[in-house]
Image 1: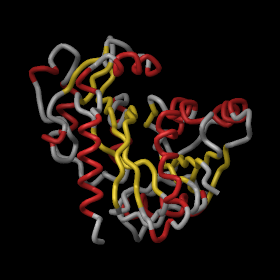
Image 2: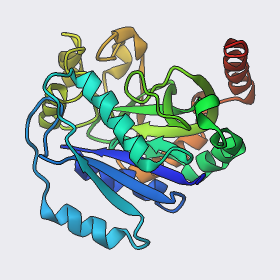
Image 3: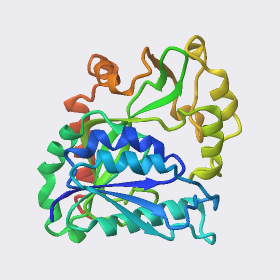
Length: 287
């Protein structure tokens, strides 16, 4: 028990796991890949997996940490959001309560997973009786919005996102509505940074397929590295949640760490984290 268990939802964007698994591999005790037994997306569409991916996975998994978890995750009577939440709960139960249950999506890449684990270990005592001491751990997304000719456009403000819990009573996606502990850790999130074809497919098949606003796709198609400063409000649901973009002059995900470490706007101050965590402590003090 008290292991670092990491779970991924395996679907149509599985190729991105080649970027998502390596940053977490060394620090993880075990990695679980949840895949629908009939290769269905939450919209009921069928996806295929190229055999070369399994060859890559076998060659990469030198310590035999990776395990597939196959089950029926497509339930047509449920909404896509309900299926997303259900699959995450099933996956975390498979990973084992009593361990740190970390869920990472295929398009999320930890900048420094070792640092995240070190911070997480400070709260190992919450694993002793997780049902009575429910918490969730938040890191911060650095959202990559679009790949351009010479680099990447990104949302220029880190966004909180839940990544771990000790007890998976998920209410929506990987959120449990329990007390949040915020840690100083950045996670690159490619989110909508795909080719146009891949993005259109994602918009039809992900759990937000009924939430996307009518303006989003046209704005995404229009913005580029030359005009992004002239535009605003880029989020696909409530546009003003992603107010402005900035630019990384590289296409290499592995080099982003260098840019984030030197950018003051992307640093999470100790005072910011203190007040976030104090607020959560006080909010749940009498619950």
